[in-house]
Image (cartoon, rainbow, N blue to C red; front, side):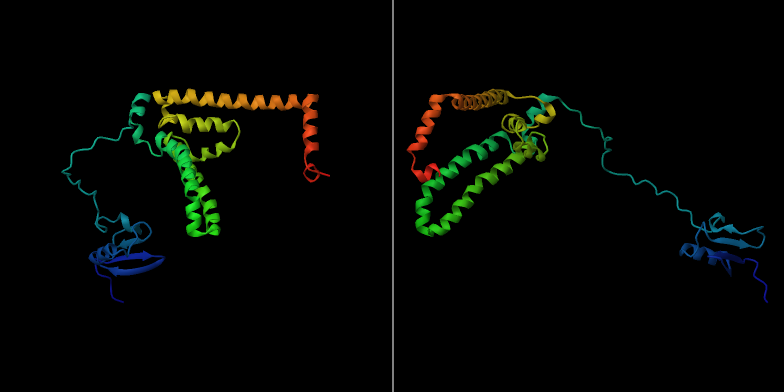
Length: 254
């Protein structure tokens, strides 16, 4: 058996002893990824024991940190959280908020349904002659949904404009809560959920809104009071019974 050359290196990979190789050949293997600097062991004559390949000086090419490339762009300032300028500044940038503003919301939820239904009523006779009653029956049902769908869409956009989640639209279906949600949608300026400040138009609208709500509630209370009072009034009860007797027998029931 021939003796190993003086520049003879052995390495162990996955428990198998391989070699001999010259130091140059071992460097090539390391450069090609054939050696793991931590798991593979290396030994040569003069070493007391096997060592991890990564501990052998000059075996792996040392890659220093890349030199910084000088940029021609001006140095950027470190990021700083933008400071709020307060409610007045937020109100002055009302057009920057996403979603539908008050004017477009009023237009599409109040004026458009009125104009749409009025125009459809005037054109119904002409359209019926052109397309026939069957098609017009279907068109009438579909036309009724157009203002509703637009009102829902602009309502969702309006909530986003005042800084609220669009899920709040479901609050319109909840009694009492619907007053608060509608107040935000019809009265408040853009970003109201953040700055909590009404502008001049909002103050006027808020007064009108709550006056209208108050009148509606008073009307409901008055109607309930009249109904309960009518139940206990014998004269009104007698008039009601006479009205029932005057109806045809089929309409008045068995």
